[in-house]
Length: 557
Ligand code: NOJ
Image (cartoon, rainbow, N blue to C red; front, side, top):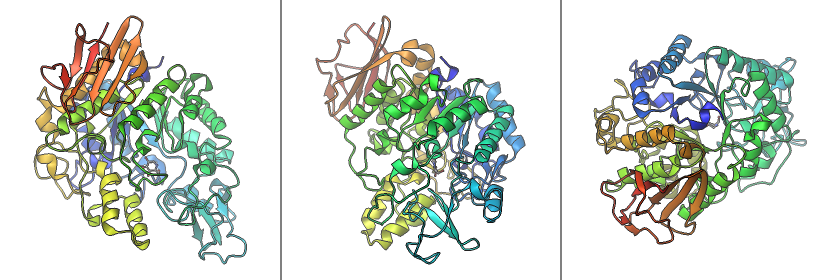
């Protein structure tokens, strides 16, 4: 049992949280100015998206110096002050480290670019495909595609070779086969631990071991290969993670660790989070957030079926019930806003559905994550013009889809639904024109609905979405059964209700959540609630039926 088993995490995407100096971009001092918000919410941990030095091609997920803060966000002294300020309030700080790749402007890569360099082998360099002139179409060493579109290899004319980048061309993949790379990463992580951080969120960490050497895989429609079996969960992944854990002292110091893992199923997650294996505390899976897409492409929209979501979340609850640990999330900086995606963001149901999504997620077993603004029920951006978007993944998709002559309305519909910018509009602090986020010109437009959806309006209101989150967080802190209780899904085939029990010893909770706008009677197959204590609910004076998007938590015994 570790401290993070009963913790609730709050994710800050610093670019969009609070801007203290009027340059339109959020910064560390902005966060320091808003620590009261975190205290009012009652969270235990802050996960800070990257603030390291970066050319900002992928807004910080392209790091050029792991041991310094980018001037856009402030200074190392500001970060020290933030850590101290959080610690003084009993809140821990988790850094987001990106070590599958660096920026192409990192000195390691700059040195690696020189063919005779001792660091040449720190990245993946390969000659062109035999029979192809370097730099021409099809000359890439393999057909590996980049997650952000286009080939995963970039030609470097100076050396005549290509380097691998599974994300943007400014994010070259580090070669973890090289022990010097691993030693340098561990050293850097130890440096941060010594500086006072309480753990790490590790970006696409299951990509660090790839099938080696990289070879051609099955080609998709664009001729490129996105076969994750070739790049994720590779042959040495457990060895590397166990080594990292040991070398950085993750288990020894009981540090927080969560690994973001594309393409991980529950059996693999159990292996990664088995405490005996000493690899990771928990992982972020994508399985439940990939249910509203057809196939591998997030842009290929499919309706979400509640029965599928219940089955998937239940599979993970059962699969990690005895060994391993779940992370619980609906939102982060890469996902659309959950109230627009899974709930109902119309004025009539926005608040109720935001609360009910929260009830459903926060009563599960695992460590819940709240993404900035989720606690206010912030919605998707709703941008209709491509000029309003800033994220390179979105902009690349737009260019590619246009070049493939997909219909413009379908492209924009996919972008409006799935773009990462949906979660990146400025935090809605108040109703003023720039939402209290900045005094300057915000780097991305504010959502016009901040006039009604904002922290200032919700903080003193006991019926707000914010207040509901606070109650859920308090309940977790007070209740052993919320932390450790055994999960059982009820009514798996019901298309409107998400119901489950949590049981620990003599204690049992029942969660009933109406994931529809229709009023629904509580089915007789559910446990009888007539004598039960209502611990928490979304609506006043609960009756025999659940109103649209109403949810409740009962103590049955
Ligand atoms: C996952 C991060 O969450 C995302 O924002 C980033 O673009 C990719 N990894 C690449 O670092």
